[in-house]
Length: 166
Image (cartoon, rainbow, N blue to C red):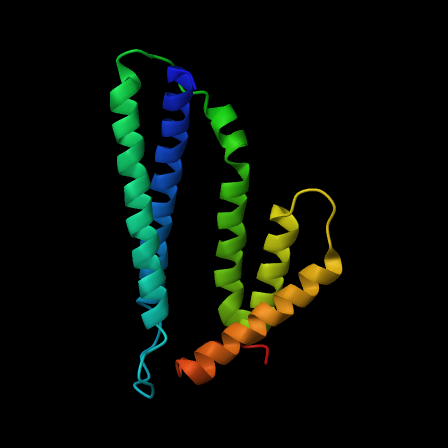
């Protein structure tokens, strides 16, 4: 790998890490709005806080690694960032965040079952390269949604949103 490739990859990683850190901030502010019912061993905000904390930790590791790589190879390579190419290279990451944001917005309106099914199906169809297996996508989305519901509802005693439509 050439030195300019290291810098290009490091810039991409740094931007992705910053986007994930920003997302963690927005997600954490959303988690703070989850009502505390006091009826369960763990509240509904427990698991999201753990996931957001882990995601933030990994994003910070990625950012530190990217900065280290840029500093290490910066003396040899001075090039301008092609923002259009960078956005094109990271299209899947950005679209995944948009899909996840839509999922979060739908969660309170239509409830866990419908929004999770639509989210998983959309994400699978978007990220799966080549020939799509629609039956596998539908069955997998239903299974993951039901299994997660059972784990949260009965294993962790965490109530999932029912939505306003149901």
